[in-house]
Amino acid sequence: MLNRLMSKRKPPHKGRFRPKPEDGSSPRGGLRAAWIYGRHAVLAAIANHERAISRIVAAPGQAEEVAAALRAKGAPSARPQAETLGRREIDALLPQGAVHQGMAVLAPPLAQQAVEDVCARARPLDGALVLVLDQATDPHNIGAILRSAAAFGAMAVIVQDRNAPEATGALAKAASGALETVPLVVATNLSRALEHLKDAGFWCLGLDGEAPGLIGDADLSGRIALVLGAEGAGLRRLVKEHCDLLVRIPIHPAMESLNLSNAAAVALYEAARRRPGLPDGKR
Image (cartoon, rainbow, N blue to C red):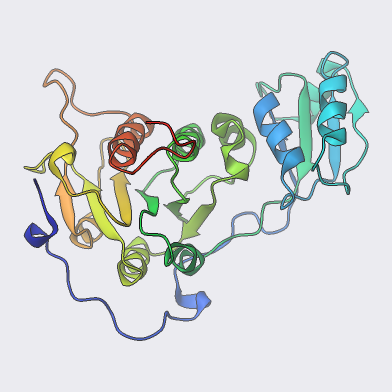
């Protein structure tokens, strides 16, 4: 087994975290409202007490389902009444080609968490799991990764702010509701973010197609941060150097690499199956 004695981990940093302006985190989109669309994304947004919503629209065939979500036990009370619009009217509100499934909400971004916030929440948890994405820019990929993160019990997904998409629209649709449950943390400096995670007891495993060891042979106990790079480019040098251990996913030689969201799902499963149980208690 690839254990932690084989890694290049440095001793933990001493002292308190740096103040938030230096922690490498920043919000995306400020307070500007944007449309979230698609059945799962919309219903999850309506149910989320942390999500402010200024407008709700639904096609006639979906109006009752939206109304039921607004009436549901435990649903936030401060919600506008849903407007019933034709599908073409909803099309006109959204980006061209948006697959809205007959419902959409207009909402400002969720409150942005910092890397420090993730570290603070993880401190009492022995088995905390987070993902760190280097140079991930595709909203569909990031959304799919959020969905896998929710499925396998990850507590956050951390992305670099450079060229990162806003957490609305296509990203929320691809996340299928997971954007409301898994924080998407935006960091300006991923190397610094990894140092903060190490200070909080995270073991940082980088996924690298050239690594000699396999992820299945690595020690995935305790707090784990899985660090993945964009397809093709992979991890940048400094990010790679800040990982404790580099591992790879074994794939057939006929295929050069996996799509980022597929690689994240495989890595998350590999980490989750070592835990006492999946979030619902099943293996």
